Length: 195
Image 1 (cartoon, rainbow, N blue to C red):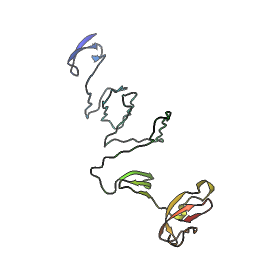
Image 2: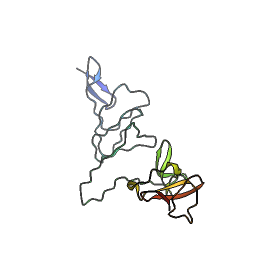
Image 3: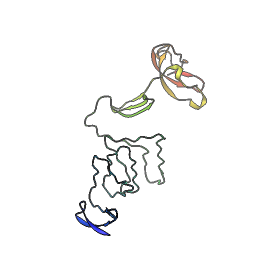
Image 4: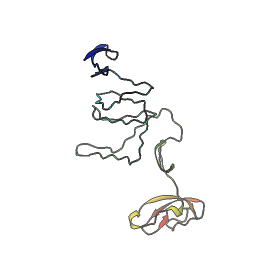
């Protein structure tokens, strides 16, 4: 056992003589990993209040095991991506608390006109969009792509892009494709009708 100057703390710390590595390293301030490839694996961190953990390696996994606020924050360049479903199972167990399942509170000081609060896609194609300007947009589909009208989807509303007739004067009519009219349709449990 020996001692070596630790530039992180400015102290002489105990080191293992056979490997000349620090046996313990305690840091009270920030620890910043540079743009190079670290040779040491950072395995676990217990954050304290208002502390930020930042990893320059985008391929790494980050897990916060505890913390004062219990939040994970991703910066502008961050991604939350994986090959499995993203599932959150909150526990609403207090009758005195008004819970919110999902909240996005944007401070919009400057953004493009096409900015969206929500854009749900399949294969890169928008299926359901909530605009930042205050309206809800359902993406129209072809009549042939409508699911079969059945009791299980009665009351469902969808827009179609190729109805054979316009909506005006045809409310309640069974929709047919082959045209160029964008109209709202609803399932009555047996057919898709304009309206």
